[in-house]
Amino acid sequence: MNWGLIGASTIAAQHMIAAFRSVSAGQVSWVVSGSADHAAGYAAEHGIASHGTDLEAMLADPAIDSVYISSTNEKHRAQALAAIAAGKHVLCEKPLAMTVADAREMVQAAEAAGVTFATNHHLRNAGSHLAIRDLIASGRIGRVLSLRVHHAVYLPPHLQGWRINDAAAGGGVIPDITVHDADTVRFHLGEDPAEVTAIAGASGLGEGVEDSVMSVWTMPSGAMVFAHESFTHRFAGSGIEAHGTEGSIFARGVMTQRPLGEVELVTGAGREAVPFDAHDLYARGVARFVAAAAGQGRPAADGWDGVKSLAVADAVRTAAAEGRRVAVNYEG
Ligand code: NDP
Image 1 (tube, rainbow, N blue to C red):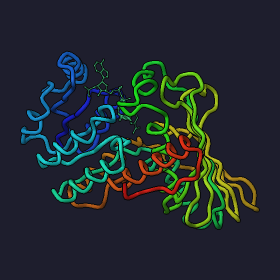
Image 2 (image 1 turned 180 degrees about the horizontal axis):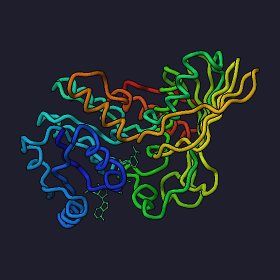
Image 3 (image 1 turned 90 degrees about the horizontal axis):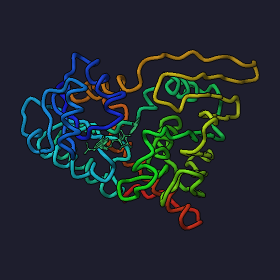
């Protein structure tokens, strides 16, 4: 597959360019940025042949069959709709858009055009999370009573830009991390959150946007979910716990971009370490995308997964702002 990058971003530099090149001899041939100088420097640094500020020029290149959108969040919608109109497959970063309605429009446009559209929710590609989901699905912890998601981390200084001070660009920890946790919970439980309550605030980094949030979600099965996301916790680590009638799963250090952490199953028989595969999360996501575009299977997280994770985050934000219990509105 021959990829064009929309957005000369950190995530593309740190993870995605290598992932694209690692799958089926993939190529990255274009990068488009809002800044010509930034695009030129980025292209030189990463060995990308074509670069510039003209999205239409890239989309007019017949050699490009897929685009990866990792610009700031307010740009995703227009860039995705343009790429879909040009017949390109689209792998889009989360949150898909600024509103659920916009995200739905993007996914519906892709369906109408017959192109593959996916959301880059990496965690469901982690060996740790695949192992956790298998334990739950095979009944090892019985009926699930609750999930606790610990995703309060420290935003590294080089990312302390739009995320902490620019609501118009989609800043704030809710669009940044709560969407990932919503997708991960949906992945593990195979159902969509129904209602949420939340409290959010700024605890040291947020300037006009929240940098911390705690929320509680109800699930249709009756399971309860507690989620904690933050940009300000230096030493908290991360994790997810699933508690059921027959056992509990404790996964530590697994809400991360790399194949790290540990998973432990506790039942009446005792404690056991659960092995999992240490493959690259992003490369697996790209492989699933490339296969889906070739008509084999579906992306790891498709467009509707991105719509739903955004809908949950949206409900969390409303619940925190208005101090009330909010039903998740997946229809936008
Ligand atoms: P960055 O802040 O690194 O980049 C976002 C945009 O900022 C770039 O696309 C670029 O704009 C602009 N930019 C960055 N550096 C410069 C510079 N030196 N000069 C000029 N412009 C610059 O964002 P991230 O990589 O952290 O995030 C990008 C997207 O990816 C977001 O939607 C985010 O939510 C998502 N993300 C997803 C992750 C995942 O694991 N799925 C992890 C991290 C981020 P331009 O578009 O004009 O090139």
